[in-house]
Length: 285
Image (cartoon, rainbow, N blue to C red):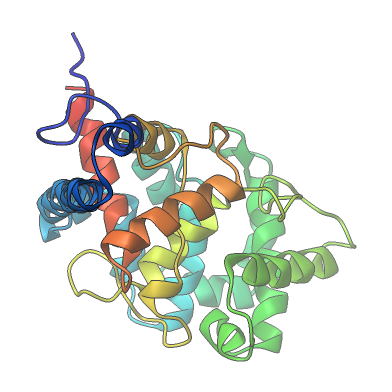
């Protein structure tokens, strides 16, 4: 039997409880109760984030792959490739990422710039992602790196530093390197509505810099600029504990959830990606 996930000391959704508080108590009492509820949820999130955001988490998570490399361009290349296939069962993701990177030798960046992808065929890489999708993406990377020293360097040149801006640039480079063809297996076709889970996950690895799990190698962005990598599991967990009301996992849901998490940690809201993961795991025990 699965256990219901609620904040400690609460018996229902935080949003519903807030509504009841406003109906039953005077304004001063409402303020105090809402403040306590906010503090309770923050303590709940902090507890789970601290439990998961530890070095022991690395070995069984896709973040272990970019951590193998020393040079920025290798780290960027691997972060975005691995994040692209980071969906489904974790054991399968780890297995397939290992096989994918084995094709590229010691330096995935050198593999890209030396056009090693020319030897790729049509074999499966991960679920619905195949070698021809991988080659498409790598051709785009090569074109991008012919224009910019790094992805971090590109973002440093942008006045507006958003996930959409980066995906626009990567998608444009990929199309130019692939006879103006687009591949939705690599990049979303709808940047206005997509949750952009994969790019937000890669950005978490590259930007968060607490020195524990994430690498924090980028200088162009700071953790307060990040958005939550929203997938089905994170969305469901966030709704169950009253952090998210929107039913669809789209960009509006990403903004809603990230804004809510900023209430609890303005400088590093995506820290709570670890918390939501941990709560979800506990729920399914």
